[in-house]
Length: 191
Image (cartoon, rainbow, N blue to C red):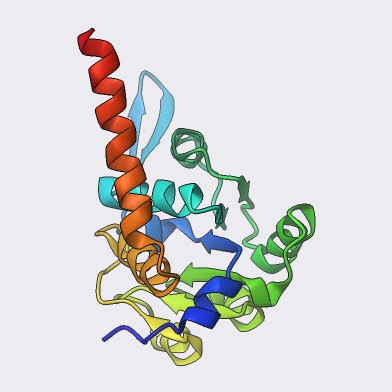
């Protein structure tokens, strides 16, 4: 059962950080070889992508911090217009996340982070709103203020976006802006 987010807590959040494997994806990695070129694929949930866009449209910065280096992550971050993305094969996430906070002039207490496994522990201990997906390991569940009902790669980020924006009393307005923008665009195309 997810924890409740008060309006004051929600309004303090200016930046949301996301892990990739196990949060934006289900944690599975597809590895292959095509004509001697190694390929890696990840499955991303489309509803999570919309959650990212809705948070960004509410003025919340969304960043990606991962302990793996992957072209698919770079592509997804670009597609979502993430405000920042760092990939580090050594999984030194906390120093990288602190640099992101400095770049965006955000205090740790004004940040939320969604994690699932031990490499996320240091960041979760640092932020004002530690969040975990339903499939998080016990160590991550123990430090998380909010425990989501959905698993990573299956709408957990979208679930958090709705919880956060609802607590801020912004959900309906953000959704309406999104829908209205699509109506306006379709009317322009029809003309």
